[in-house]
Length: 277
Length: 300
Image (tube, rainbow over all chains, first blue to last red; front, side, top):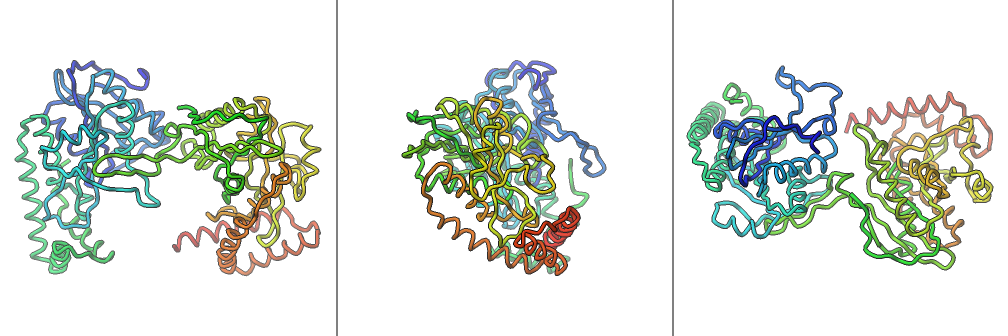
């Protein structure tokens, strides 16, 4: 275990919760939220999982002219309440990888609860409020969350031909170790999947603010969301076709595949240059 | 990672029959249908999470109720002449970037299965799979056989509709069996079990298609039923084969005429028992069929 997890320093944490975000996620929600938390809470990486057993290292991926190398890192700060784990999803040895995350949080940092962040692609319009859905691995934690504004009553079965998410696998692995945990899900409008959805990020962060009394000022995300909405409104004003599509989505009507594609392209073009990394 | 047994049945020198998915799913269809026929009872499993990614999730009222993994289950049945243990694996644990099981995970899985075989006093294990052959889909598939020791070869020669792998034209006494259907009998040999692998023939031009091939599974079960002296109702195989034949026929109709012509010539040669299928024919059909399936999947 020690050889697979490399520590750069040993954080002294009392009883932190573990927050996990994967880099492959609609709207990059997990990556964005965990990155935001790290920045606002001045977290630093204290450990990383060695990649060789878990990722194909036959070469290197390139994204937007940048070399990508799988980094699976734990972040925190001395005396902090949170451990953040960020990583691309492993390509194989999934259970061993998830076990390493939980081992590190439980034995080395005395982690008490698990939170995973994920997005669901929604057929709805961007003007609808972002919902927060919780899937729990313990009835007690579900009960304890009754005071928060989140949907706690989801019913779901994996459709044929699909596989569960890594978050669900992690939540299940945590239950085997008696670590209570919740998978947090936010539906993201399908045409915002390849761009940022600041409102979805805000929805999750608002919950963390309440849950951990973080007192993070989220006004920068409000501003980001406002600017995005303005841009989309201007696009709607200049393109009757895009406006018609969004109006139909706002009336809970579905679009054809071709219309979906046109809307996605239109929004992507419109929001280009409005991205923050 | 380990074995979970729900029951410790008392068995008298049972044989073990194993099935995993593979080409045409011949091995798993054979083993699993036979398991159903003899009404074998589940008594254990290999914990799957260390080998596989989960295949299903059930959430009820916000609570994670169940995460389902590909099954790796043991079953047993006491029959008049012979007690049997079945092992049915829904997926093969593949090494990174590989199609078939190989490497550490496959070796661990095979050892766990054989641990159970040893624990219940098994002396012989049977695996089955596909033999990619220069045959025709309307002809009855033969079953190729290999064994873990010389002494079993004479016995295998007595099985009906079988052929020793060494007798297959052009193989020069050489061959290999991919995945766990091959690795397991190999490891069984190392650990001192008798092992026999029965491979049902599938035409080379269907071996890359995702279709199951129940005709070959039936041929394998016919051989197994003969060895074990048990009665089997073959209706499920025939029903499944009739359904698949319709799909194969419509696929075959779409083959380019020059490929069909060569395949039909092959059929006549096999029926006339004339040795006219050359290595050149095999290569030609393989290249053209690969091209056909590539074009087809590109169009879909």
